Length: 316
Image (cartoon, rainbow, N blue to C red; front, side, top):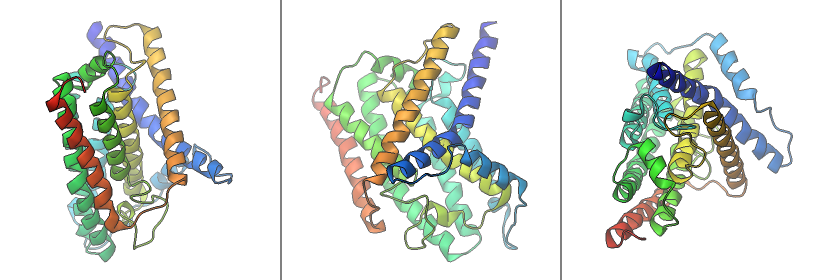
């Protein structure tokens, strides 16, 4: 009976992240619109957009290969699995043994790799530009993320997310953790193509990164890619909440009340994260593409400095 209950909680988490991902994207858009003194779309608008895309026919180029057709499904599967592995409202779930930071990074990296290949598969100039820019960002974002994982592993002795969440509840304020948090926020902004690295609401060929790789997609394929982008945003917010703000997570073997409190705490974290992201994007301008390496270089240096501080003294 315990295994069945654990599987049920794991299934609830998988469905929860899938259902909340479009709502998080819509909430960010709505808050940004209010901050700019506009009415803005409903937070439920992403659901309507996805349903509309699912009803449309998928139009494919004549030279599209099997890779172009299968990439949306692979990206969606990898992102959904990675988002479901991150503890959102409870720890010690059925698949928590595989919920490792390195596994999450590997799943996201595989999705990015196939998206870049699909962007170049058709042979358009936009796809090639977007793929090259995506790889430029990844070449700096992934080392920074690895250094963050290295810092957390030095401090906690593990990269398993459920263990990290339990360990961080008993850790006080540390300079190394603050540096790692700032670096992870910067990496999350770059990985999700948010301002100032990229503007998800524009299609200008001189600035777009993610949108350039998906211009040739339509119908259900585009719906899966858009849903994967929303899942990726929710994944990074869940990851920051799990590692650096692990309050409210239900412990293994907890009852229904603790799980409900965990769900409520997770919703509050997402709402606060959406508000902070919208506020940040409305108060800062988009940087030039060639300034992005400087932005991610700062994240890499901060994560490296955090790891060095832990080497010098475990109390920092």
